[in-house]
Amino acid sequence: MMMQRRRPFVDPLLVSVAVLVLLAAAALAAVGLGWKGAAATLDVSVQITYIVSGVFGGVALLAFALGLLRVQARRRRAARRRAELDRAVVAAARLLAMARSAT
Image 1: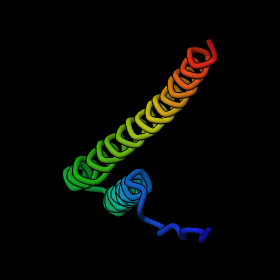
Image 2: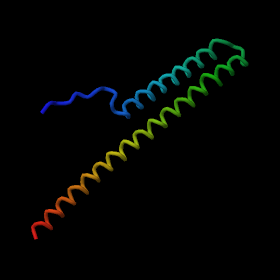
Image 3: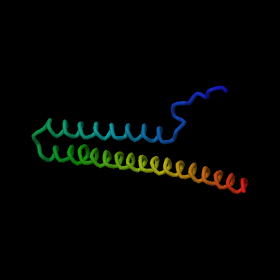
Image 4: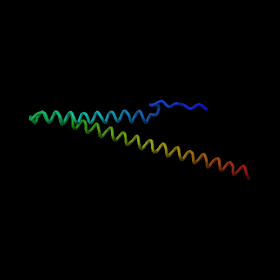
């Protein structure tokens, strides 16, 4: 029996997790850039611009990415539970069929 080699991005979960981790990293970079821009000036009107666009936008993007990661983790857990339940149902059906054929 030849062992099949897995390609790295065949699993859709891995692709979505990779994209969401990159999105979270970009969000953290936006927060850092917003913070750096606000700290570079004493003019409050300019600081507010950096904070609103960089920090608030970055935090919103980070919350979005982490929320989607949580949804993906829940979906993966639910799929595993369904697969376990399906295996149990198949095993029970086989056992019932064997019991019926024995009598």
